[in-house]
Length: 338
Image (cartoon, rainbow, N blue to C red; front, side):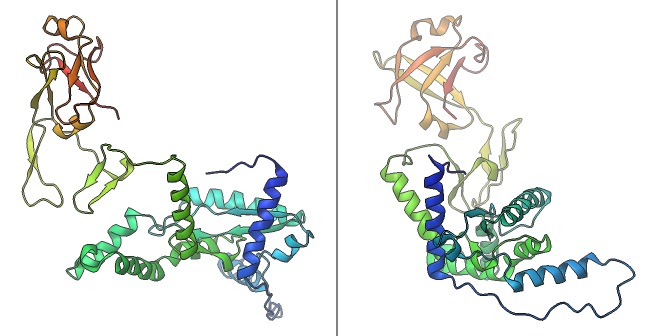
């Protein structure tokens, strides 16, 4: 996500504030190391692994990639700061990461040569459900769940796992020769980032930008949490059958059509029957569609229906000559927004 400033002056002011905040907690120093030993004969073949590793460690030790806030506060240099989009701590870098790292690296080095005080911040993302699953599997080996140990201890377990395995990606960044300030490396679950996320969500909630409402979700019976669409595997059921669902000891019926009725508001003695394989989705229904030429429902078109669980919801019978097939099921299709 990019936040575009209204004017460049305000953007420069924000960057100065950023460097000022960093200067309060970071002491800038340049360690002294011995110069590279060039006395030995030149190798017959170029060994990039050895040569590049030595150069990168030399750059880091010399502090070439560290940003000095004093240069910004004193207006000696103009600021240029950017952030590495943090990759998931559970994975490893791929070609896509190498692409954006190469672009950002070229940009930050160009700005440094142009005289800017540059700051390129590295970090990793906690990966949400991915990390939770990995840590929970470790707990299962001990016969425990996250509910057994509680939230605080579970977070401690995530941090312990991060310390053991989370540096792999950072080492890959180093292998790429990234000109980042390693003194300011972050993890999205560290104290400062956690406070920032809490503050952001509270502000968004206070402004009404984010809110709570009743909506259909992908509920995981094992993790007991909602999952995004990209974190679930969808299976097409061709015929009714029983399947095993994680978290359930018994097999679950799927693919079975269930019929239920919506009564007319003006005459509860009349009703429209619909059929669905996912009865739970009826909580989100907002209308019932019928074919305009279906004589069974001519008198129902445009009439309001009563939702059995949400009687105040406005529902009506609408027509759809394309998606509704009069000869399939009951000829009436429930409408549930995605």
